[in-house]
Image 1 (cartoon, rainbow, N blue to C red):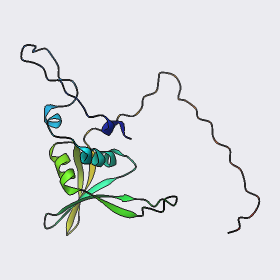
Image 2 (cartoon, rainbow, N blue to C red; image 1 turned 30 degrees about the horizontal axis):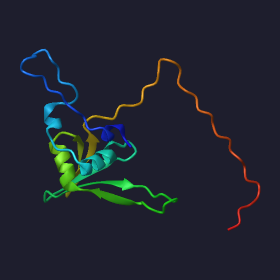
Image 3 (tube, rainbow, N blue to C red; image 1 turned 45 degrees about the horizontal axis):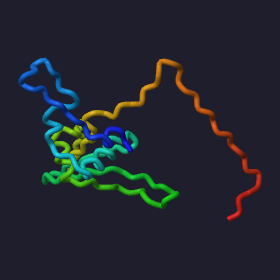
Image 4 (tube, helix red, strand yellow; image 1 turned 135 degrees about the horizontal axis):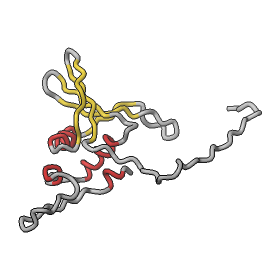
Length: 147
């Protein structure tokens, strides 16, 4: 799971008696919005850099959020567009949790790339050299495969 979605941010606000106290975490407007499982599911998809999410706004004003799910030969699923719940995506956009990219305009619709408001932090490595992973050996099959 994504580290961004697994932990709901907590915010401590400065009290009036301590004017030098600082706000920890996110801004008050983002934390004041309710956060539920549907929000977490959509944010998990939007935060995955391998899954570009788009919103299409049609000429009549109808919006559709979605992404392409590649075909997985192991599970025999995918190879299709998947729609995300519009009400959840609109709520995340209005509360500032997701942002829209530059518009791509067609005669009947406008398409925007959907981005998470805060990109997930990449795992940091220590000051030493990058860790080396062993490369798995590859066996060559000499006999022909028979179906």
